[in-house]
Image (cartoon, each protein chain N blue to C red):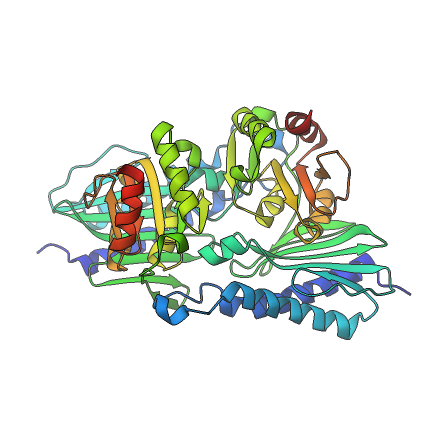
Amino acid sequence: MNATPSETLTFAHQLADAARAAILPYFRAHSGIENKASVGFDPVTLADKAAETAMRDLIRAHRPDDSIIGEEFDDYEGTSGWTWVLDPIDGTRAFISGTTTWGVLIGARYNDKPSVGIMDQPFADERWAACPDRAFWSRGRARVPLMTRKNVALDEALVSTTDPFLFQGDQFERFMALRAATRLTRYGLDCTAYSLLAHGQIDLVVENDLKDVDIAALIPIIEVAGGIVTDWQGRHNPKGGNIIAAGCPALHAKALAMMVG
Amino acid sequence: MNATPSETLTFAHQLADAARAAILPYFRAHSGIENKASVGFDPVTLADKAAETAMRDLIRAHRPDDSIIGEEFDDYEGTSGWTWVLDPIDGTRAFISGTTTWGVLIGARYNDKPSVGIMDQPFADERWAACPDRAFWSRGRARVPLMTRKNVALDEALVSTTDPFLFQGDQFERFMALRAATRLTRYGLDCTAYSLLAHGQIDLVVENDLKDVDIAALIPIIEVAGGIVTDWQGRHNPKGGNIIAAGCPALHAKALAMMVG
């Protein structure tokens, strides 16, 4: 019998714990070191590879028939119906800069449908997690159910995107109009933006050119918390591309119309 | 006899502890609450006022002759030569969005010269602190001396600013040129950008229209860590205005020339 989503989430927490242990020694590892001593030392790449290796080793040992899609190494095709989608460090520019808005993304799809997701912030000890019947944030022993903010007017909405200059031409003009129509804009939050949307803190995330590993883990977290995430054609379960996420369908529809209507 | 800078830093840590306790109940206080239940509840303003009140009460009780400049209440003119410069929550947009890049800023000038500074991040439990003979980051029992990164070429530099669209006209064009000439840009970090500069993680911070309370506490942290912070005329000890901070003088000169040369 195949693993249930709940069992799969329990196992995903073990993967997140392993990734944490692998990554933390590299975070801010430059601090207090003269620049010349750090030549050739690329902590984010070392951390990325160490974390993905740690997670893949656990999957191979405990769930050898699951498929794996990861950012750092080749895909593995299994037979169980479960596919792990791993981004060991989402937000490498944040990591390099020493901010704590990067995260470990661990998603699991069953027969191609997003089912389980974790976003873990190792340094701050924050974790957002979901399977079909529950979504929660945890930190140490603290645990809060995730719930998006609803019924937010466009001019009250808090918006996030990676970098406004990633939008070109018509996309840039449309994003600037959305920015002007909303309450405030935050940049460069990567996976933290989607997690805080599930948390009821941010209302809209609009981004282009994402990869499958950038979004797979976040879809269950957003949806089980009451939010909606689609591509810019309004299709659910996007595997990357242009993404729009909102705390509720009405706001999603308004923002989508401004970006592509 | 007047308090020494070292004694003043010790007391500043008590102020930071009090601000933490006052603010934390309000951070992400909306989470899990229906939007309609939060009407009229403005957590960041409540937190701001509670924290500044807590700090002013301690100053009044223990150092009644010190002057106080604060963001939320009227200035107080004392006689000791020491002036506290307080921003209970620097980065209110970050606070509102639920990210942890805001901070409590506590500066102390002696006879108008920046001497002591603390930047505290209550949720992540991170603190950057300096007096003239030491600058360090601490978290729980962990403690690391602060040291800026030196000898960084312009095209290797990590740059931060609040929001590129706060620059207008010529300033915007110049900032975009600086952005293009450097390695990567981070936005919206407020006081965290300057703290990570002192930490050797970020190399340049360029901002306009700051207030005295936004920068006073950060000047000692940056300078004792080996960095340089001036206004856009190159003057030291700015009381707000247009600010440029760098990990070393050579990079500061290059970036300043690009912004105003």
